[in-house]
Length: 88
Image (cartoon, rainbow, N blue to C red; front, side, top):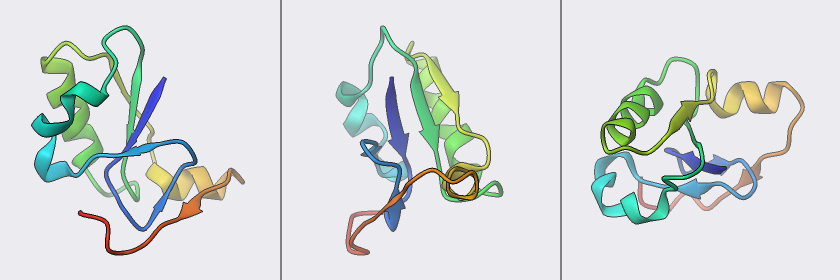
């Protein structure tokens, strides 16, 4: 499983940051033989859904982490704070 985040201030450990404005430039990072889990910051952000749909149209299996990183943290799982200067 590859976990892909569309945010840059905090991430789920071992996830990969892919800027939403450059999805095409990162297709080589995705798996075609495993599920790619996409998430964004909060339940109101629709970028994860849009990215998952886009990747699925390119034949990459995707799943969205509903609620984003906020629900992940709320459920007690760890997150990693990152530098705020990562490309968004």
